[in-house]
Amino acid sequence: MNIRFIIVLLFLSHSLFSQLDYEKFMGQKGKISFNKEYSYANLYDYKINASKEDSLITGKLSSSIPEGLLTNEYIDDLLNNEQDSISFEILMNSRLLIDINTERICLIKYKTRSNTTASEDKIFKAVRTGANWRKHTDSNNEIQLLEQILLDTNVNMLFQFYNYRDDPKYADINRLKPEVKDDKGVINIKKLAEVISNNKAALSKYKQE
Figure: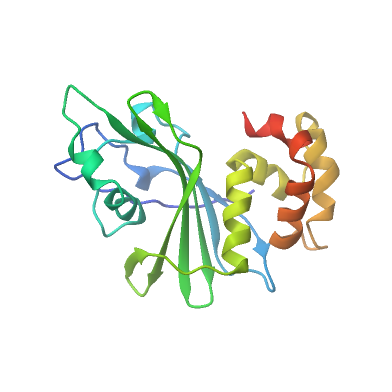
């Protein structure tokens, strides 16, 4: 699958661990639809090619990028971290960028960890109109479906649903993916969300990979 995705992550003085240069990483580009095919859709796995620390955020990042807007949500906790004493972390999982009408929507899947206690998976939303990113507070059925899909899967699962080739290791996905794709191989997010919801038990083993 031809895949390109560029994520820009800037260093700030409050960052306690060296953050990886995500600009060098490749993501997964695919074709998905709601009522019509999206003109742009890219999925990125923060943990690919990253060490443990590189998929963690422990300090404030620039508010000019979606990851920085996420850190704004936890600024007090992050600023309480010290170089030799980290009490709060944001565990980055994956990120979906998608163009809806004239806006680029970003959905970030992540957890927070305070000391040794981790939260459940969460979704942070940002929107870019023109050149500027801001926190996205509005929601509709389309975005809610994308959020639920991201929560219920991982990057590899979504790749397997999209991939026209069947991987024998993913027999359950191979069985289900014809139900979510049209004859051009475009995934319909309504059908995908329904299939994932109705087959959580069978698909759960892939989510843990």
